Length: 305
Image (cartoon, rainbow, N blue to C red; front, side):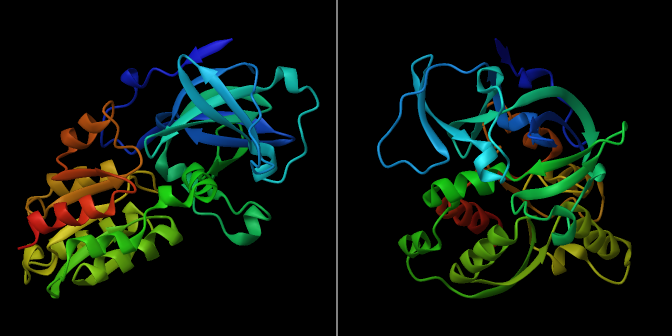
């Protein structure tokens, strides 16, 4: 069985909604963003590769592409499938690479709001370090929203970006012009802050999601004694974030008369040809695909004089 995921019919930009694929590993339900998937297939022959990590089963040949197969149950500490011949491969694409994730059962696609995704506490997620959020669905199912990006970066650290690449830009002047950064991954927040500081941008205020960034900006917009554009010179945001995604954050900024002049750059693994138009529609000034840190800094340079 092959099921294509038609991203062309997905949601309008800026609605703060997303569609998720629910699947099972053992007795637990997990979720992945539809935007990060290309298709779902039943298992096909796997070619083993020498010296691969235990969780990499090998590679498959799919329509002319060689795609690694990751046994997701090993990553999230679940038992192997009882009936592996009935498993499914979810073909995911991010950071411009494809990976097949073996899962035990694909349940359905659900449309939800980012507000339904709660940032998990360590106590709530137990031994799931790859949980980016917890989703309570209308039937009271609790699903773990997986940080697929973190999994991919741990498999291949080069896909996470390297702050040393900024050295290629040469000596940088220091500036105190303010950048607002919205990014839910603690690892990426630290990497981006370090990157920006090494690029000369010393005044960076970080937020864990779009909602927190918006609450800060909204206060500025309501304060008639200040000009928000003199306080904040640029907003840098991810797309996937609990509570409020980057598209919705951008939409709100651009719909606000006192904030709309602030440049917004989207930095995400979801900047594909198919999805670029979504950022354009909400008014993003620029969009850069992770992990292109040098390209990101060059774009920021264009908007911060």
